[in-house]
Image 1 (cartoon, rainbow, N blue to C red):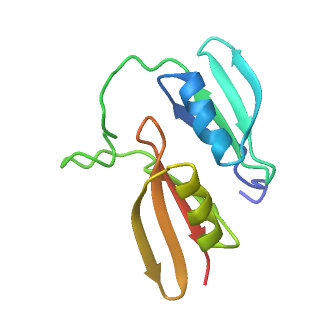
Image 2: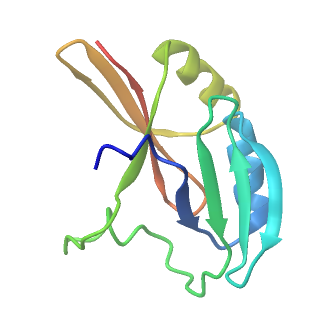
Length: 129
């Protein structure tokens, strides 16, 4: 389908809007609206154009990510990868906000690492080779 021009937004089900909003603001996202709609949803957007919709109807208190942290491999989206120009600068900024890097990888010149948001959703920061 040639008409597809990009990803409009990523939807993340979260337990607590204030906690998620504070975390994503540390990554440079700005709060736009919400809660709105029947779900309800809150919207944040990064100046780069990356848009996240927080779906505010989580009913579970599972402390782990069922897609990433269990031996059974369920289908579903496992993470979002944000492309960056300087992985070392991002690392410094995350550490200054006391955000833990859970894994670092280097592959054929590309550098990337992973963090978790307050609901254990995985975010990859990726600097291409």
